Structure formats: structure tokens, C-alpha cells
Length: 477
Image (tube, rainbow, N blue to C red; front, side, top):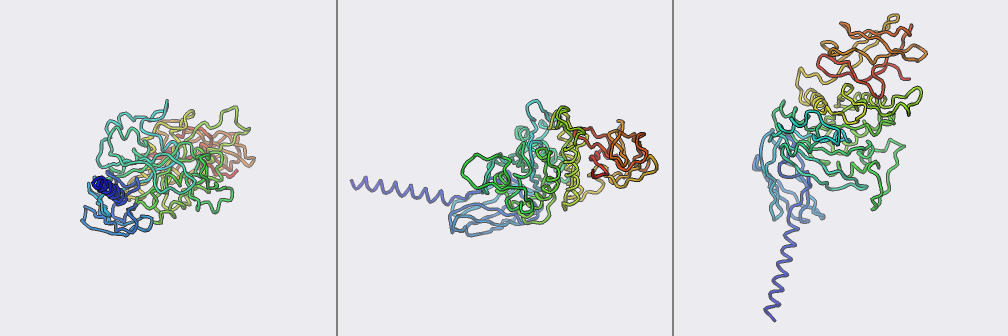
């Protein structure tokens, strides 16, 4: 009997020891793991959970330096580690009694990539919607200096502490399931600056901009109604703040270089509000991180046949062109930002243009010129500088056209001219030594010009660097 009681007591002690051991084990958010990339030359926060009130010790292999912090009453702790110039692989050891080791850690450049379906679109494409050249790109993608992290899609009415996802090596099987835009961006950045690059893709197809902004970012938008907190799962992914809570908040504080954004299609009917929300999102995220005006580069939505001819108003209102205009205007008011135009690669019957390589590389041009300081790289298509009128002729000059303009052999079209009656007519346009000259025979006294200001067009105006002009207008009608 005594022997039985002794064995039971011993078993209980083993169970309690196991419980204590499990409590002692360090718990890290998904954003910290094997194969991760930490931002170089910074004080990178690392955080997690441990046994409450226990001392957490962290050691980095690149300098053998040890750090410590005391977990609070809820077990939470945070330690900032000094990261060296790019390199690796390294390891990070973390312990509060039971050691956790992160292996194959690289130090380099980290970019967060977010938005809706065109950012989410993987190299494999969508059903019946391919990514051009993806098979070759996947086959040649093995690169130990690029690492990939995809945040699982989710929503939450309250701010989440973690999300699901893991750092993966850049291998064909992993690249096939990763964002095509983010991959092509990362590949050009890595090839050019020759350091490790970490890409974190947090995107959700079909979503508006409002779900991606945190609750404290809506103060100046009186038309936004915040959701009531509830345990029910009967709310939409379009509910304000629910994607920020689930897919951005868990990595707020994670050290990174900059953000990429590809979204706007789901807000195409509300260009006026989007013009305010776009800078608001950037301001909101920068406030959340508290590290200043980090680089923010984004994609102007591509032309698409949003409205069928049977649904159009008369005269038609080019709402998606107005959305593109809103995105263009935002680049002038958002510090340390830039916009990539896709006016030449839209598809009338597919909202997901297949030429994702151009998208990623145009974002990379922005980063290489604006963030990494490379000279000689053009990052923008032609931007209207000045309009002058000489009789029936309208003359336009452009910035970001150092060596002039071109159509690469195509006809220069999509221009229209209006007089004081606000009625636009198609215009004949010609590239000259100084810019573009155009006229419309029906307009004797022109006052306004528009270029490609429709829902669906195929842009033909480029600078000699091969970057397309955005649609634009000189009126505010």
C-alpha cells in the first residue's frame, strides 16, 4: 500500500515538473523563427512569453552578446538586440530556464508587403488567371539570401497577439505559393544590393482599405463606424480595423526597412474618400511602429473594365480613373513614399494583370532610388509639368523624362481636349523635342486636357526608361 502511495506521489511530482517545464518554455510569436531575417544595423525588438517574473536571457551568435529582461506578471517580455551589417547565418538563444534556439537567422533588409488580391496573388496564379513567366521564375528561384513569410488570412474585432505563418527558405516549392509581386520585388533588391532580404506578405483578396487601419486611425473620418466588440463571428472582412487587428498588429514593433502596398480595387467607387484614407493608413502604421517615416511604396491600380456598357451612366463617370488620380495625389502628401503606375499592363476582363514581374520591379526601382540611394535609376513614369496653349494647339512638358518620351512604336492615343463648354473630344498627339503637342479640330479654344482618363485604357506614353505615365487631367470637373 505504501509502495503504491509512493509511486502515485512520484508520478504526481513528475506531472507537476512537466507543467513547470512547459511554463518555463519560451513562447515566441510566429514572426520570430528559424530562417528569419532581422533588419540590419538597428535595435531590433524581440519579444514573447515566459514564466511570469522569471529572468529571460537572450544571446546573439553574431557578437556573443547577452541581454536579459524580466517577464511581467503575464509572462510578457521584450528585448532589443543590436544587429550588425548584413550577413549570416546566425543563431539566437533565448532561455528562462529551458533554452529555445532560433537557427539559420540572416541579417539584412526586411520589407512588409500588404494589400488585397493583386498582392496576395501567388506565383502559381489564380484559376484561369496566370502570372506571366512564373514557371521559369519558380524554376530558377533557389536563393539562400531571400526568405519568405506569408501571414495566414484572418480577421479579428480585437487586437491579436499573434498570427499564423512561418519563415520559409527561397526554394521553388515555397516560391510557387508566395506573392508574385513581393517575390519579384525582393529578387531585384537582393540581386542589386547583394544582402539577404526578408519578405513578409500580409494580404487578403477582395478587401477595402478600412479593415487595414487600426481603431485609433479613424479619428478624422466621421463616416467610418467602428464595430462593436463581440464574440460572434458574424462580421465581414470589410469591417473597419479587423484585418489590422489580425494580420498587422501581431508584428507591430518588428524591425523592417519599409512597406509595399497594392490595394484600391475594392474602393474604386469612392475615390474622394480613398484620397483621404490612403495617407491616413500610412500615417496610422507609422504611428503604430513609432520609428519615423519609413519608406512606403505602393501600386496604382491597373485599368480594368469595372462597368459594362449596359451599366454605364450617360455620360460615363470614370470612377476607377478618379481612384487612380486619388492614388497619384496621395504620393504628393505622403512623406517618403512613391507610386508605381500600371497604366500599360491592365486587362479589360481580368482585375489581376498577369505581368506581375513589371509590378515588382517598378516597386524595386522606387526602393533602389529612394531608399538605397542608387543613382541613374529612374523610378517614375512621365509626370505632367506644364500646359501651355497656343491657338488650337496644346503643348505639354513633363518631369521624369530626361531623355524625352516614347511610345515604343505604338500610336500615341488616349488624349482628349475640351473648351470652356467642358465637352471633350479625341485629340491628335505628337511627341516633340520638348514634350507633346496636341489638338482637337472640334475645339477652337482649348482649356483642358485629359490623358487615359477612363476605366479601361492601355497607356502608350512612356519615358525612355520604359516607365509609363499615369492617367492625368488638367481640369477638376
